[in-house]
Length: 147
Picture 1: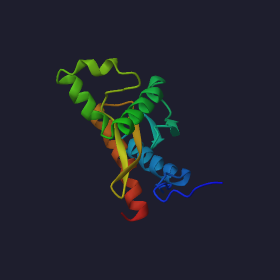
Picture 2: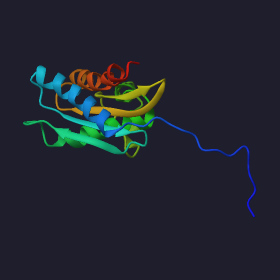
Picture 3: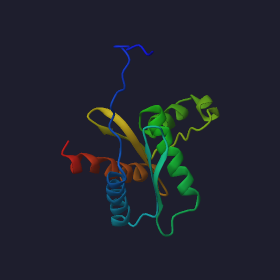
Picture 4: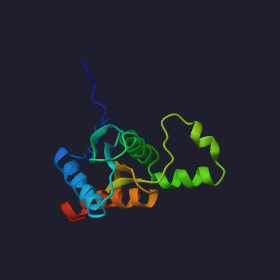
């Protein structure tokens, strides 16, 4: 016999769909191509699991791994990866010893209704340019969903 527990419940959460991820990646890619930048673009879900990875023609091979690391860092720490780079540059060098962290500018969280539902990371050009591309992708979600 099972008992009903009125305080136990499942919650609903917003999740990125592949269709939305591809649209965000396309916006990021368009920003990169418009500026003639050869980069890799990675998008992760709210568990920092890879949903999308693209290395543009001519991008450094290592940029794919770095873009994914940046995206996972932004998701796990719920802030742009730039904040962690600034912390390291400010003397918090022990952060580089943390497993799975890529404290390099170029990734931003993806927000929906005030919640972080993923992150997008870019690697291949200057850090500010990587972040510019990531923002182009992340901002596409609001444009698509009208929020």
